[in-house]
Image (tube, rainbow, N blue to C red):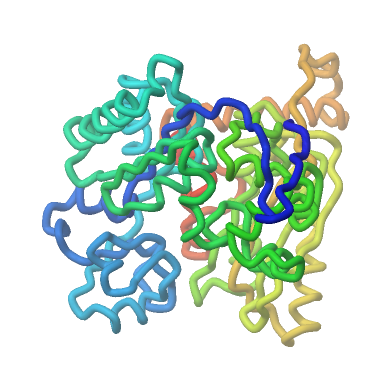
Length: 443
């Protein structure tokens, strides 16, 4: 990382010779993605205000709003009842998460025709690194236009996108947000950081309400305040290890990413109003645990900790309890650990409210690590009731269930009751920071 700069005391700005900062990143952000897919699938929705909702209830919230709906002040997170009040002509489309993944895969395939995809940042965001023969300003703009046109022609005419081009990925992301919908913005090093001064601190990924208050206490109220400090002083305001990274990024330096790793795998579900008692909660949690265990096996991980977390109807806070696991990816072991936690949940519900009424339930497998290596079991031929033999059979059966569900559909094989009206339908849903594999729609 560059040395701390000397200061020009008259202007109180940092004078620093920064490294060469060519255009290195192209960031593509699909506009109103879920709603745009719905408009692509249903021509009667095109040109009209549309929101996508998880369930057909006014008490839920929009998980996406079309460009037309946003003109009425409707956005992701707006309650459905409020969105209807803001726009009388509003149309509501039920979420089709599998179709969003299918369109996502088609879009990624289209981008690969023009440039390698460096990172899929979310279901609707993609980052591509520009090589030396691609990072001339005119060449990068022409490339962006070809990608945008290719998506419209080969994937769907409703799938517009905004593209940002900049020296690093953070700035390219900021540039993609500057002109929506269907925008194309380039941030050259010669314009930095001054061109960012009209943006808000909260526009920068990683700065939320708490960080904004922390920066304000240190005298940083906007991007200009942060950029006019020395890198070390800016880092002190940010706090944490490598706090001065943001200063360099905002000045256009392309820093290497910090390594990340998977730490947990889990799922949660908001329960229907008539399925919030102990038994429906238990059955729903078991279904979520099976989905998490299947993902664990597919990714080649084992878990050492299971966490059950719920949100009661009358509380905003999340209550949770946990159970240690021997490093495992066996569905039977995961379910046994989960079942042992339900007496504690029932007791907590009685203590708080006299009865158990759970609005949301989730199951997370924590302390996740890769499988170091496997060999054939030495215990497969032991007495069938031997614990080691049961463990071997349990994992083999879990994997066999994965294969059956992948081939014949996610309801082909399950552990415990799944039908009969006692359990909510637990489907695969998309979190914007994580794109499900299509295999998950079979789990």
